[in-house]
Each structure stands twice: as C-alpha cells, then as structure tokens.
Amino acid sequence: MNKRRSVSKAKVNSQTRKKKVYLSYSSGRYLFVAVGISMIAVALISRLAFLQVIEPEYLTNQADKRSLRVTKSVVHRGNIEDRHGEELAISVPAYAIWVDPKEVKKEFAFTREEWKKSKVVNPKTGLERYTKEYFYESKKWPALAEVLGIEIETIAEAIQKPNSRFAYLKRQVNDPIVQYIKQLKLSGIASQLESHRFYPTGEINANILGLTDLDAQGIEGIEKSYNAYLQGQTGTKRVRKDRLGNVIDNIEVLKEKKLAGNLQLTIDQRVQAVAYSELKRAIKMNHATSGSIVVIDINNGEIFAMANYPSFNPNDRTQYQAYKLRNRAITDTFEPGSTVKPLVVASALIHNKTDIDEVIDTSPGWMSLGGRRVRDSHNYGKMDLAKILKKSSNMGVSKLALRLGPEELQQTFADFGLGNDTGIGLIGENIGRLPIRHRWSDFELATMSFGYGITSTTLQLAKAYAILGSGGMEYPLSIVKSNAPIVGEQVVPKHIALEVVEMMEGVSEKGGTAPKAKVDGYRIAGKTGTSRKAEAGGYGDDYVAVFAGLAPATRPRFAIAVMINEPQGDRYYAGDVAAPVFSAVMKSTLLLSHVLPDGGDQSYTYLEAK
Image (cartoon, rainbow, N blue to C red):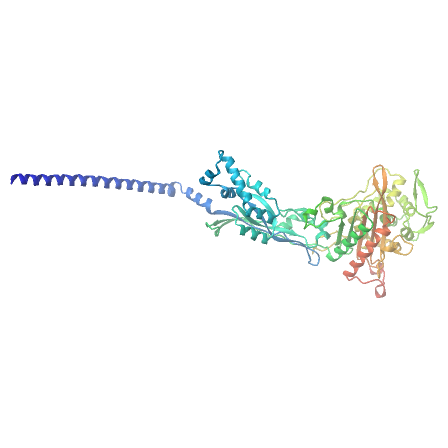
C-alpha cells in the first residue's frame, strides 16, 4: 500500500517537474521572439525616423528620379508666303526614328541554357555570335531597315555603340512609316515629333527662300536671314509622370513657349513663275551658263520677282549643290556694259556739261585716247542725246564723260546705287565695284562711261532704273512686306530723270538696239548692254548680255533687269538674248497688275502726270 503511494507520488513529482521545464522553455522562447520583434520594430521605427526627420531628402530624390521629367512643347517653324498669301514655305509634322542601344541589347541577351547550347568557350565570342544570328535572322530588323530606306548594317553599327542610349536612325519620316514601325514592336526603337520644311513652289523660289537643315535652322537665303523670327522658341516644363508615362502634375515652366512668326514677302508668285520660266528658257536656248532677273515696283521699291538659274528643288536634297542655290541676283557681279549709258547722260545734264538739245559729232566713229582706241560699230556722225542712247554710241557717251571728270561721274553712279548696299537685308549680297583712284586716264574714264571697269549686280542695276522711272526718287528696296510708311529720297533732279527716260524709248523702236524688247500696247524705255567678260590679262571671248528697262514709259510702274551669263553662238547680243525675256516678263507683270496700256485716254506723258 505504502509502496503504491510512493510510486504515484513520484510520478506526480516527475510530471510537475516536466511541466515546469516546459513552461520555462516556452516562456524563454516567447521572450526571445518578443525581444526580437521589438528590436525589429525599433530598427524600423528608427530607420523611418531617420528618413522622415533627419534625412527626408533621400526618398524625395529617389521618387523624383523615377517620376520627374522635362517635356518640350514643339514650335513649328513659321510659314513664308507671297504678297497674295500663297504659301512658299511651310512646316509639316514629321518624325525622327531613334534607337536606345541599351534596350536593344537587353533583347539580345541570352539565358544560361541558351549559352550552354551554344557550346562556346569564350563568353564574349559566344555573345557576339548569338547576337549577330538573332539580329540578322529576325524578320523584324530587316523590315525596319527596308521601310527606313537604310542598310541593316547601319542599324547594327548604331546598336553596338558602347555606353550609348540614343542614336538617330532616320529623320523627317512621315506618320504612316511611324505606324508601321510601331507594329513591329521592336525593343529600343522609338520616335519623336519634329517638323519637316516643305516648299510648294520647288525650284522657282529656291534661290531666294534658301532652305533649312534637319533641325529646322535656316542655313541659306531668307530662311537664314529671318531665322530668329521664323523659328520661334520651343517651350520646356518640368512635370511629374506616373509609371505609364501619363502626366499627373505640372511642376514648373522652365522656358516659355514663343510662337514662330509667319513671313509675307513682296514677291508676286505669278510674276515670279513667269520670270523663272522665261529666264530658264532663254538660258537653255542660248546655251548660257547662268542668269538672273529682278522685277521692282518703281513706286515703293517692292520686289515683285527675283529669279535665278540654275536652281534646284529644295524638297529633294539629293539635287543639292552649292552653286545651284546661290542667289545670283545679289551675289554675282558683272560689268554692266552699255546699260550705264543713260546714267552718264543724266550725269552730264546734272552737272551742266550738256543740254537736252545738244548734237554731238561722233565722226569718224572712233578716237584715240592715250594710244588706245574707242569706237562705234558704225560712223553715226552727228547725234543728239536720244540717238546716242538709241544707237548705243560709245563715242557719244565717251565725249560726255571726258567733259565730266571721274569724280562727278562716279558720284552720279553712286547716287543711282552702284557700288552701294541696296538695303534689301539678305545674306550674301555683293555691293559690286566702283573704283576710287587719285588719277584716271582718259581711256579709263571713257571705258567706264560704257560700263567697263565697274561691276554691278542684277539687283543694283534694276534699282538704278527704278530711280530713273520714279523721277529721281530712291526708295528702299524690300522683299518682306511691311505696313510702315515708305519714304523716298530725291537723289537725282526730277526733270532730268524723266527726260532720260523719254530718251530711252528709242532703244526698242526701229533702228534701236532692242526692238525685241517691245511690249504690245505699252511704251517701254530701256537699254541693252553686251560686255566681254574679264579674265587674267584682259578680256576673253565670253560675253554677258544685259537688258534693263521700265514700263509704261509714260508713267513707269515696273523696272526690270535681265542678265544672261555667257550665251553661246552668233546671237550673243543683249538685244537678241536678254531683251525677249524682258518683253515677256514685263508684259505678264503689267497685265497681272492691271496696269492700263498706253494710248487712248491714258496717252498723257509721265512728265505731265508728275
């Protein structure tokens, strides 16, 4: 009995000890977990406090790196239009296709299993081989190269650039091509909006408008001269985007957007098209090398047309050659020849070296000056001033020049704009050459009176005749339309300018040097000029054919100068080469501008109208 009690008591004591041990173990584990959790909580709270209180900028910077972006507001370049609003240069949306080589390389990276299958020892060689096979065997990349019109090797080279995140593949791409590329779903290939410059009139205005580069910056012509005005200013702002790229907040404006300005020219595209067509036709017919023509509104100095040949289509950059883009009307100079003879007659009248009724004896048709000879093609005998211009007598104007002296003659030339900037404001203008010397020989003075030894541009010559036609008023030339009042300056006495205009009418009449310059229904006043081209050591066998004139002679409205460079064959004289161009262009200009013909109720003289 006692034995059983003692066994039971022992069991109870054993169970009690086990329970105490278990409770002790459980309590220790609980305490350990509790302490551990507490320490983690303290660490987290401490870290949170550190980030929120002591160094809060860290998380902000990390968030900004992932969400803040700078966006651009693209400003399309302003349009250029003619005086009637016809578009000459416009900007249309276009896209640039570019590649992120890093993103593309991610697609090329192969897995460990693919690497094992390649069975190559050198990892770099294996990667290069796998990349090459993947790139060229894929149908998508050759399709991209084909639609962009580039070689697939070009894409491969762009992708292999070390540490590069951006490379252009093709610029000035239209929207259908962009949509096709998006369907290819190529990693690392993206597009961005830009603008493409388009010239609706093509080669007709290329020389005066110039062109822009791929970044829409003017690099030639009016595009360059007025680049700041046409370009505007692209705006930039800092925004916050979500993970899908959507803008959720506008933070700040970094640069204000400035809209581009549209430019209206004084050019009349209808007249410009006729001028270019007739000039091109004459150059091809006479196998000449180049030429230019300028049409000026005498009443205000506005340029209605300025055409040059050769030219090129600026919409096709493969045609681009520097010599084709040159605006020859303002850059190329030439000796104007006999077209300056009316200015010599005006100078003699201004300085009282002759009078309107004087008759000058040019017999025997030649004279010797300093051992050199000045001559006419025929012995015209005694001639008045009008006939001297009609027959283009070198003898007649030489005798007037010898009375004047070099200073007086040069001053008159300068008053008519020779040797001076025309003020048109276009880049590349040449002011020509009006030599200043302390001593002049009689022969040099005589030859200057019929256009040798001095140089002019087509624009300068047209301006000189515009001054004659306006009654001696010089108006600033302009090719950009302006609403500002136009103020002229009287540089030549009015009555003298008008008298010389009347004398020049005989040039286009029977017996004159340019009957082909006649315009049906209108009286014209003009002058031919055929001069040899200077070369090293003297003058060669090439010629420059020039005709300058104005119409209607009774009340001049337009002045036109035509220059044909190096016409070939027997018909190289200005009366045969340049005068027909003047006639065709002047006729179209007068009709398109609704200028009434001479005759009938309009047959009053210009002198009376003034």
